[in-house]
Each structure stands twice: as structure tokens, then as C-alpha cells.
Length: 285
Image 1 (tube, rainbow, N blue to C red):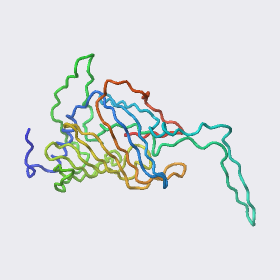
Image 2 (image 1 turned 90 degrees about the horizontal axis):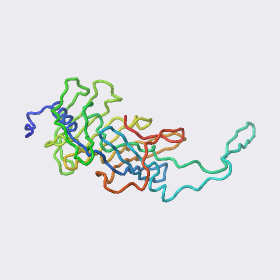
Image 3 (image 1 turned 30 degrees about the vertical axis):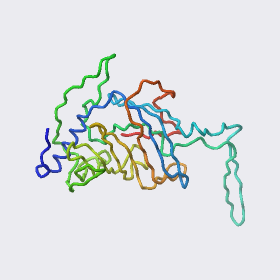
Image 4 (image 1 turned 135 degrees about the vertical axis):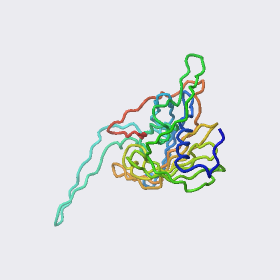
């Protein structure tokens, strides 16, 4: 279908076409990729790469929870006891401080174990419509015909700011104001291709599911490969104040080596991690 000329489209029509285009996309039955998480932990640059795989048909994600960097330089095996002693100093008044003695705390992921997928579309995909079909045996997956989906139940007030060029692609620049549930409807600005209506870039009011990540704005970059949109990069320039007095700057989550599964068997076991007292899962709502 040839898109209508720009002057015939209003902002809401562009947004509806974008949601329909995203919903109509069909992903491979499995997508393999690497998650690169980087930033400054205090003043120390950190970069960790995790191998992962997702099943778009049911949303399942599996991850090898130890990064490549941790495998190359594992922390020393702890011995003895982990304890601390307190020293008191008195001069006019008394004060005390604690000195830890023993093995150091276990490795902490920069902002959490990244249980995330590059197929997440930040609410642009209409719910209830499958976006992947698993093959049966050796037969290729057959894709159902999906009609164009639209709705009058608006989550956003949408304004067309104008057109722009991103990475050589002509795009519409949309501004979005949530009409309800602003914590769930996080999109604030969206750039979509004028020819295919697929997302190229977005700004959102918060990301993932845990504080302080949900409380700061993020920039989302998309890559469109053979007509299929993937998230390529999620970044924030805000300072993140995390537990245990950790401060992280310039956090970036990037998806690398995105592709369909090959014939080789994983040399590392992928699993679905569980959040514990010592780990935090980085996940999408």
C-alpha cells in the first residue's frame, strides 16, 4: 500500500499506522543476541556483555547470567570469615565506625542482570496479537494474515512536530502526552519512518521496572533490519543512585549480534534468572 502524502496525515493517523506496522511485524521463532551494559560505576568505567536468547512467540527470555568480562577475570574464591569490627573514638563525645574484614562482596552487575529482549516495543504493539509463530517439526512457520488494527481508546495526545532525517532516513517527529497512566504510557517523543512507519528513535519518561531507572528519561534507538524493527540502544544521561551507595553515570544498554539461531549448540547454559536478595533483574514491564 502506498502511504498517503504527508499533508493528508494528521499526528494521530501517523501514530495509528505506526502501531499497526509494528503489530504486523513477524519475528523469527527465536532470536539470539548479546546484551552490552556499560557506564561509570562511580568513576570506574564498566562494560559487561551477556549472551541471551528470546522466544518472541511467548516472550520467554533466557540469559547466561555471568558476563564475558566476569568469565575472563573471575573474582578470587573467598576464604575465611566475612565480618567487621567497630572502633570507638571519644573526645568530648564518642563516635564509632565499622571496618569490614574478610572477603569482598560478590560482583555486582552495573544496573542488574539484563533479562531483556530487543523485540520489546514500548507499548507500540497492540496486545493480543502474536508476533512470532514457531515452526512444527521441519516445516516452516506459516504466518497468519493480520488485518490493520486501530483503536479509538487513545492513550496519548499526539502532536506532529514536523519531519526530520535520522541516519539518512526521512522520519516523522511525534510528541506524545499521556492521557492516562503516565507510568505505564512512557513514550514522550517518537520518530518513525515516513515510508514504513516503523520506529527509529524514542524518548521515554522511565525505563525497566525498578527505581531509579523508572524515574529518569531514557533515549531509545531502533534498528530496522529487512523490515523488522529491533531495539539497538537504550541510554540515559541522568545519574542513577543505586543501593549500597553506588552511583552510576551514563548508563547504556545495547543489543549486539542480533540474529536468528544458528545450528551450533550453546557452549554456555542459558536460563531464566530469578531475582534474589543479592541480585536485581533488569526487566521490562
